[in-house]
Picture 1: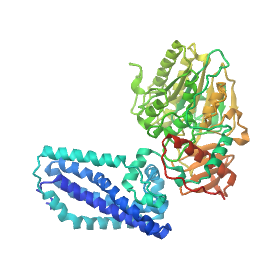
Picture 2: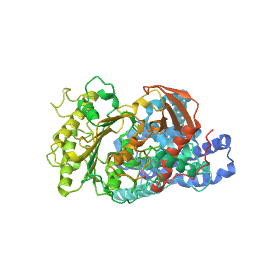
Picture 3: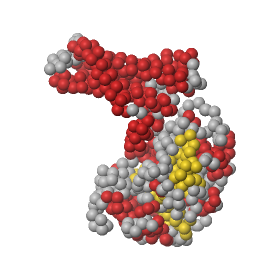
Picture 4: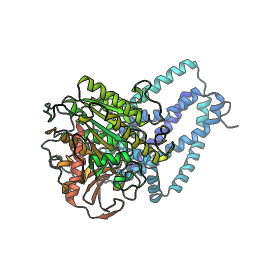
Length: 639
């Protein structure tokens, strides 16, 4: 029997008590961060007092939201389960509040800000982050102290919680539910609408006035990390001038610009089919040294088409490949532009072709709501089709991740036939799904039974490509179609280096046997270069709104690649990798010939300036698309 057994709960009193507890922890956290800012940040108390006052006001709805599960707990569960779970859940609640408070202190000590997208990043790279924390802090002692503080807090509040539980309410249960839902909606809406505070030109003050729980949820909602606040910068005018020079354009913009329809060299504008293959690392192909015979069809296309042998993915997630191959954008810190809310009017390959008469499509074998694919491509003017929109009876095999690639390609053929019948050239950005866990596919297609793990996934994906090309060859539009086969990213991103180069090497094959002669292009290039390169292949000149460069016209000595993790931004030129990191750090490494080893070396100022030009320049261009970040910080001189 616990002290809580047999007591009738008052949901609002329990909610109030737990919210006050959260509010107290928030207040103590802010006070500790203020002391840290004064002691180690060269700040004055006078300059931060306003942040304390504003922070108190912002903590009220945040505390109500954090404690809101208690209201539902007391209203929904029956007396028996409430009495059993209330005490252990209260212990967990108190420990969580204290643990997050300490985590905020550690995060503040490293970055001098509240939780942001880097904190979300830590949840992704748990192995590396937990290892780093264990090496940097006495985790066992910290957890032990928090456990003791939790027990002391629970013990000291036991009578208050008991009174809150025991208090009876004269209101009917329906009335309690009405008030509960109304208040819940109110506090959640207030918290959801609450933007980061920007009442001061002092960044410390703005961050101190914020609430860590609110800022974490805001970061998850915004899906981005402000470049200027965390990375090395240069004066904006210099950056944009360098970016124009590096891109080989007189003008660079992220916004779609109306263009005049070009006179194509042939009588008919060719169809364009861009196939992004899930996790198709270059290392799986015999073309790049593999001996397992997994990709006979891609290897054949590589011999018969235009193969880019040194092309590197922009990131380690599908959305990075999608943004690189649709908008030609360097990977910005945080999450991909594809995940940004309300992102419209980007200058994409689809927009450039649509302005010249092409019908533009995005087709995906999975559910397009995942990673906001449907929302992103739909907002850019593409006709979107995911597995929910395929022709009835077309799909005979599917798993949780998506339909079999062969069915996706069948739907592509249907859409292409429709446009051909209507007399319109077809442009399709296709995203496959079969080369992904759980690696299941139709039986009898390849010699590896399903599920075939990674080898089976790769071989089946290759089979589907071969089948697609053979079926396309029977179509009257085939001779006037240009195919691009490229991976979204590699199958693995693990490696010894901060950015393991060999884990970004992907195949890129342009295949159009009636229009393009076989050739190998060995220039070092980035995934973002494929957009201007495809426009060049189409004979469409003068579209200078992309940051990438035409690989076919790029002097080999100017070849470079842009690679990233969630935080680290890499600029590979020759065998030198310049990495921009948070806290305005710049590190440089000499990369081995196989891309697996990285030795630290002094930073080359010129390469550092070029790296900043690409990433800061892209951030400046994207500011026009709703990236409302912190005030501009002083430019950092490259030493």
